[in-house]
Length: 308
Image (cartoon, rainbow, N blue to C red):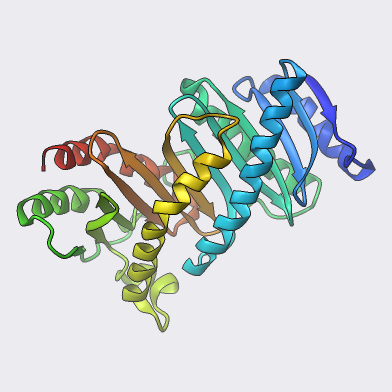
């Protein structure tokens, strides 16, 4: 792989360049790595010709801009800044990791079979830069990939809500599926939409264990309203995000993870159903586990929406 520096690279970036160059040979699933400082491209490590590299750098710059915009939205949740944005399309996957202040490290792959490893590798590299270069704490982007180490929390009361004029039979089936997915230990909220209309949701956010996040003046109802407002914005936000990545991929987005300081929000379009699912956890160590739990139910949700 070849390192290309921009005119904005300065001596303060040399340690970052060296660290990334030394790490990449052991991280085979990262095809391209690029660094941005306050919106300016600093360096790229990649193979391929210069024209393709420059095209990707423009796409990554747009992704940084989108990351900053999305950060303003997720801060309303009260769970901290956006530190990891993972986007997958039908032919590419990219992670934008927040390193420090307005600095971002971006990794990508076009091998979807390597997407999970690429995501984890970039997250680890971001943590290494934070801890070794900036002497900051590891924010655990992506959560803990190993099995849960903390004791299980007592089961919480399940809360379900349904949209207006929704088909009762369909909603009953969806709620049954959602209720089997949410868990106070990891996946705290899941909602389903079709044609951009809210169908139903299930959550355990009234649990006493989650009171530090939802026990304030707004409470659980305020949080539910925030999540529905966020989902409503996706009608414009997802196309904007896809457009920003057009020089990387023109294929539809199939997965979006917005990983904040305390937890993450997941967005999954549901193929063949004109719908999508939104999931959320506020436990940072369980970000990986919570997403896997959500993914276990996606096929069933697609089936229900496709036939309902």
